[in-house]
Image (tube, rainbow, N blue to C red; front, side):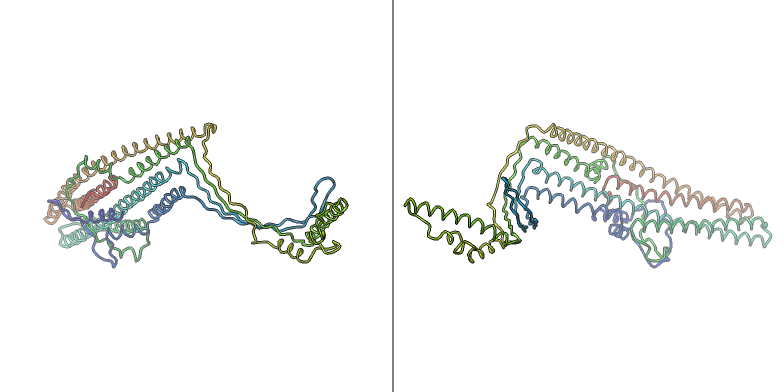
Length: 509
């Protein structure tokens, strides 16, 4: 992009000559700050708000491509939780209701998931096409910025040249006024001639003020488009570049071919057209199977806050088991079966008599309960592979395919419409360039004729054969002809800038 803009700046500064034509009047160097077109373009690329907004689209486009490739990789998720459940009562049926302790919970899970489908496979190519479209949009914005700054730079130069024409007219009118007063003093002119010269001089002074105002406004507009504020007073800023004229040597057929190949707006639409083609392909893959793989690890903790209730429930269960043990021992003894348990209380963690739990048993229960928050109980590893082939989805896939094909057709027509518009624009700009160049010759002839007319009117007035009105009219005609010539010359340069913007690249080396 920077290379293209630099080519435009260099091309506009290449010296061209046209036989028989004068150089464009330039404003005198009065200020302390000089601004070239290349510097203006560089400042605009760095500071223009509209252009910088377009540049901001590049980063999301790059991340879109990375995200599409990331969709082909497995995703990893990790989670952890903490919880609390209050105390209450649990109904086990049959009228058995037992109190429950509040408890703390925690857990973790680590999972891997990988999905593969036709849409995920086509996503990278589609996002690359959209990234190319974004890059071309940025290129188009750069071309438009170059044309905008170049045109406004020419407008400012044209305004400065018009100021010089106005100054020259003021000098002519000052000389005319001095001549009228001299002739009046020697009795060769009337007071009417003097007043006529004074009115003409005042009119030219006003024209100079307005031309100066127009020049200042043109410079301010240029700085605004560049995205900066005036670094010094506006009348201290001078534009340093000049733009001589040469006959255009462009061929319409070559320009149309260049526009088809290089116009960034058209290239952007073609990239989006390719993305639409890929979207149709992705919609078709929804009729094919998709593959998904999931695997995970997890664990949990559960700690009772009321250890006394937990110990009490364990004691009751142990006492019930010890009672059953003693009953079995008595039966085995009575039937001489043998195999009696020596100490039922100790066997189930009770002290002699079964009144309390043994100390080591109580300590073990407390240790096993003290697990919150990180003494996890690991769950078994789990994994599953799923192959999915939707049979009927309510015509949803057919709808998406139809929509994708419609967008594809719209993209094709949009490319065709833009191509027609660009070719028409290039053709019109080419004809406009030819007209602008021919107008320079016509305006040059008119300017030369007006200068001859003024010279004749001045000579007649000095000899007493002409009137002050004739001189005034001739001066007005010269000022108009010189202004029209300047307008024609700068219209020619603006036509070249417009043609380059339509083609989408620099045309001059």
